[in-house]
Image (cartoon, rainbow, N blue to C red; front, side, top):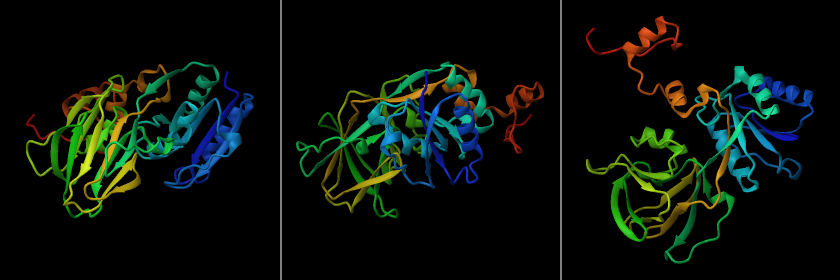
Amino acid sequence: MLKHITLVQNLSTDPKSVYANEVLEHLTHHGVHVSHLQVLGKDCPVVPKEAACPDLVIVLGGDGTFLRAARKFVGQNVPLVGINTGALGFLAHIEADKIRLYLDLLIQGKYSLESRMMLSIQNSGQSAGELAPLSTEDLALNDVVFKNANPSQLCRLHLYVNDTLVAVYDSDGLILSTPSGTTAYTMAAGGPVISPEVDAISITPICPHSFSAKAVVVPFNKEFRIQSDPKNQDVVYALDGLECGILKPGQSLVVVRAGISFQMVNFEQVENDFYSLLKRKLQWSMNPRWQSQEARAGEIVHTEHPPQSILPS
């Protein structure tokens, strides 16, 4: 039974606290103690001691807010559930107009916990053998991204898998992604979408200057070392969209699967199935002809301007 919940509210997406007040009123009415944290924009939540170890965290915001909150609570193995008041909401996929429905499911215990793999980084500096200690600030739920500090220039990145040189990329950068992150930057860069049930890591070059440089999917139990070419300028690296450091020319960073997993709340409703989310959020494989037929049958609700087929009827 849930006794203590921490609510993380992004004021940029709920400025008048309409949804936050609805959550607070509903939970307190059912005897749940709520610690209320507020953030603005892309700020990370500051978590006081009394809010640090709840039974559950509810995030009011978009996927960015969800990711930043996850970094703060993963060390306590606290599960998160997201209510989307942002733009897309793939991780924070509960729609704001269904708040009470899902709060009731939480209160009744009608949910399960789903483990999601994470990545961790260890800065090897000049030598791959001297690894820095791991902290929760070195974890990524979605991805680790490498880019030239000068966005107008290519960078050359050497990829080693278990100390074997696999590829040298001349590109805008490189993305190492968990399955959870493949529906984010990886997908936008032309990489694969991987179901969260699959234990794998995708490696996707960003705008590679080669037709043969394609995304690859690798088993999770490997060690990945990304080395900045000695002739490079500085290369920045970011975890879940937060810039974390710089690789000087010749320096390396090691990326491995983290020793801990992230806990997400999972509901059994059909609309929360991974493949349903792909179709609903990203218009996955939606043929305009099928859409028209299903819309007439009342099975799909279209946006105001549905995509038009370029094929002859």
